[in-house]
Length: 211
Image 1 (cartoon, rainbow, N blue to C red):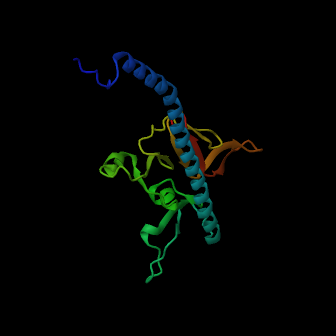
Image 2: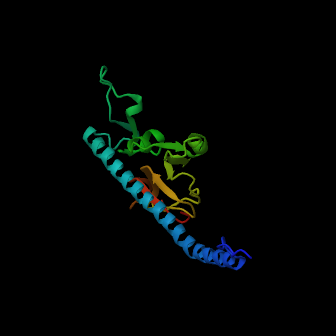
Image 3: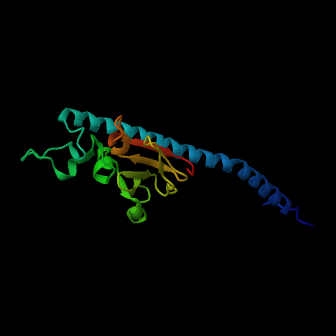
């Protein structure tokens, strides 16, 4: 007497092919939406950072006005005094330019109480502690700093117009330009060449072309 066939286990080849096709279709449909969500998340974080930059700049400027240092090309704000000497500790000095945070680690980054590392040190600082989130900063030129999320595309092709407005051709990050004095030569009514000095206030630009 023949034994009855046992219950069938597993998938047939045709069923496996169907499953693979269905999973592939789902992936094709879902991946672009997932990428869009990632991009939206990065851009949202940059908007939050931009707001924090503006807030920190306002706070530093308000204290500079009170101290009468808002018109100085170089000064500092202090958020902590030594309990004994009543002097500002070096680590508590926020360097300022015309009453705004300087584009540096001891300026803007410190004013925002931001946990940040240099872009060149990003991989070394994060080695072994991938769960720790830190912002990354780079100083491409004097008076300018760029802030990134970890491993974001580099901001390139930075431009500035006559009004001091910033732009970039590519990348994903925030550009901060500290205030500076713009000098333009003009002719006065007598035909003499005179130099007109205009203070250009700080500028912040959000670059999301490659987020």
